[in-house]
Length: 209
Image 1 (spheres, rainbow, N blue to C red):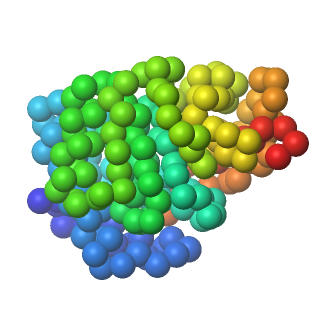
Image 2 (cartoon, helix red, strand yellow):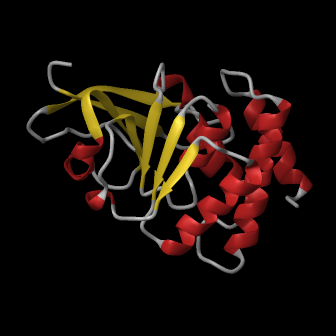
């Protein structure tokens, strides 16, 4: 179980988001953190080990991108790690087909365990390098600062089609995208409840789309 202080912080943070979070979703998010800390005691899933830090830096940080998913039907999370943001977005958007791409075996196993426990049928796990993935184009390709914007787009261009969007969650100001055929469409400042840090979401698209 999570410490009571972490549960209270989670509730306050969820209340501060600009969209509703149901009691069922709140319970799933708390259960995710419980599983994360249980696994983290044995495997190094995340360097953030204090639940009071995990709430804003992991859960609330990931959830702030939800208003920018718009009408997406499919999403690929590249370098998902401990399922961030893939699992949390799947909890909040059950109609969204989420692909968690994670080459680390232990982390991929953790994502699968959470999918089973939280009953998330809309999540699939690709335990492989992003460069090796082959499949249908995804509406959204997202990552939490996996790489600089240019390298991220170059590494994941094959995940998207003509109208796909590449969303890169960063902790600093916007970067230029220096890759032929792509352009930085927008840089959205993100306000993360309970977190005193600058966050920005880079919205990258193919040119002329």
